Image (cartoon, rainbow, N blue to C red):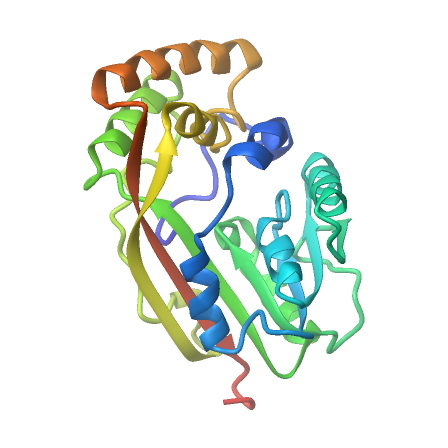
Length: 265
């Protein structure tokens, strides 16, 4: 998310520990996101797309369903294994590989688009930007995007964050303000802005799916011990029973920036 730290001091972040919950309860951006990207010529039939920090391959698999030729990379072997399993179950043509975004095993000018959803903050910009430029075809685009709940607006999300902080005070991703820069600082001098959008959408959850979504977040499943996650989840279940019914919605803000090289605009 824009403006948030990439680390939680004193905590190791291991997304591989969340793979089961991630695959089941973290579906990624809603259909409206893909429609908006499609209107900007991203994710179209036949495009070659590389999804960085792919996790369980949510974006990659969705683009593959739309007829794109998709590759996904991530530093977590567990996440890549889950992405491959899900793609096989869905009979999708998508390839996945363990690799850091800063050192990618592809030939120059291999991709029409490179995407990075909810992960750009974790990359070393001085290394990943040249890699992106190396791999994009002339006229190709980089898409960085986020799909984030709004804790200062949504009361359930806000209460959940307070419980996370009780169990993991080192978590630095709390209190997202929802501010979207018109042109991120890291992109200045590296890319030109082809387009951008942001909007809010209420995402449906049940108590079970919201608990799973939160277990799969950085402050819980990716950082705490198994016993600590179980204790958090019990308390979260009780909290949700006090706050809401079985089904509810959580307000999210979705944003995307679409960049091109300076010679491609």
